[in-house]
Each structure stands twice: as structure tokens, then as C-alpha cells.
Length: 182
Image (spheres, rainbow, N blue to C red):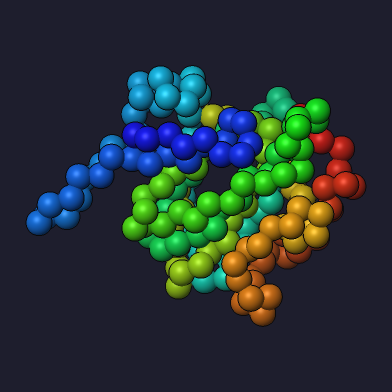
């Protein structure tokens, strides 16, 4: 796997080695040994999958300590714009974000360490999104910030009229109104 650093320390884009031939393709989607060597030691304990239609925006979500989560995300069908926002108090990049397009074609993966809010927008007709977490979900520790917070300046790559959100995701506070737990 090839690891690309981003503008924010700890956030990584992972490009797997893909072997194509007349039958199709093969790649290792995850190797604990190689991940530990090239990214760092993270003990993933849960895998999740979601399916969404075009225009869906999910996020920006996080888990508060002591149940904060690092995530390794990828798309197995379709295309999404995936976003990580730095919520670490005292970080030089607090409130900044990294956005990367993940797709079934590019097979990129995105590693988001603990201390970040995470969300994505579906850019294809549908998307199947998979992610590993290093901590179990605890509903009492969930947190979120507004996906459309103007201070974040995220270009979700979707026209306003095409955006589809849950009722819950429509009403999260702006980052400046949230005390970061990290």
C-alpha cells in the first residue's frame, strides 16, 4: 500500500496495490501488519457498511472520549466525497478539513484518527460505504457539528437542491458553538 500524507497530521490517504488481469482485479483491502508499519498501531474492533443514494450527506459526526473513534473508510460501489474535520483543541489545524473523493474505481481509503468529525456526500446514483472503527459505538457519546457550517468552508460537490439529509443532521450546531471534547 502507498500512504499519502495530507495537510492535517495523522489523516492519511491509502492507495492499495491493485492487480488487474483479464478476470478482473485483486487487492488486499486491509493488512494489520502493513497498516501498523506504515500508518500506526490501531486496533479496529468493528466494521460498518451503509448504502445511500445520490445527494445524501451524512455527518459531520464524532464520538466523544472515552469512546472516540478512529476510522478507516472506503467505497466499494459508487463515489463519495469524504471529509474529516480536525476537532483537536490546540492543534494548528483545528477547524480545518481534508476532503477526498473515494470511489470503486480509485479504491482509495481514508484514515481518520480520533479527534475528528467525519462525514461524506454521495456523488453517484448510489454508494456502498464501508468503514472500520477502533472503538464500539456508544450513543450517549455521539456528537456532531453542522455539515454546512460556513466557517468550515466545505465544498460538498453537490447542488443545494440535490442534498438529502436526515432530520437529525439538519440541526447540528456550528463548530464555534461546540466545546471540543478532544
